[in-house]
Amino acid sequence: MTDSDRGRRAMLGMVASALSFSLMGVCVKQVGGRIPAAEVVLARAIVSVALSWWMLRRAGIPPWGQRRWLLIWRGAIGTAALLCVYAALAALPLASATVLQYLYPPFTALLAWLMLGERIGKRVLAAMALGWLGVLLVAQPGGSMALAWQPVLIAVAGALFTALAYVSVRSLGQSEHPLVIVFYFPLVALPLSLPLVALHPVLPTPVELLWLLGVGLFTQLGQVYLTRSLMALPAARATAISYVQVVFAGGWGWLLFGEAIDAWTIAGAALVLAATLVSLSHRQRAR
Image (tube, rainbow, N blue to C red; front, side, top):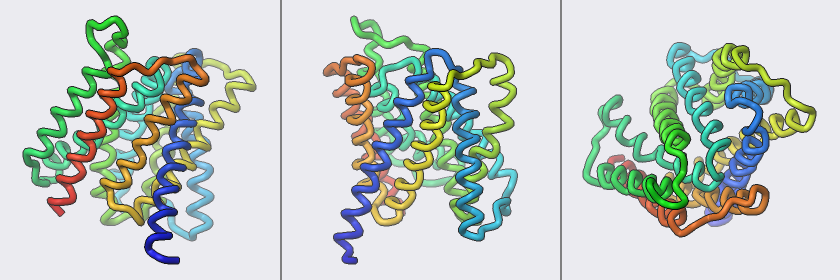
């Protein structure tokens, strides 16, 4: 297979990953009006633990890793991110919630500077300014189509927790196999989400159980396609392609939930994409 063929397959893999994650959002949206976010996280964790354990056994990789406390920390931060992301998906239009989640690259660059000592420059500061301007356009405070500020803040918090998890993964990547890192995420999410579910348990209907199963399956598919594609594409190019998830989310929102997409949301999405590409170009120059 030629390099161009591998690149083409990797780009198709990024599109498949974006489609899978957008379908995960549809599943969360279908149950989000009645099933609490913690219960969705629990269902996702059960499916992902089983699939990740099977993948580890098939690959013959010891599952427990070397830096276990950092693996547990990454799992805890990832669980917090999932709780925020799922709560935002349930409360906001699919396209808006997806746009706000893409604030994580500028946050990652800032946190890598604070926690790992990586250089931060004018590009990262410009990216953060663009990202926050994009958030304001999507949220439209004071406008006729303004979003509720609580779920917007929850979505931004989800992007921040996602960035924290990415910084942890960068450190863990020096000593742990990727499948081990993936395995610890749902392994930690299970005990963390159980007490929250016990506070407000909701018995899913058979149809809702299918949607919850879809959350776990589409998340796992998205992760597999994403991991394979990132091995063959530069980070900036891969992220630019993955941004098609916003298009998928907007399409599903319009088709399935009757959600309108206005010019403000499109403009905000463009600014957040610009912030993402600027922050990634800074990281490539730093390397």
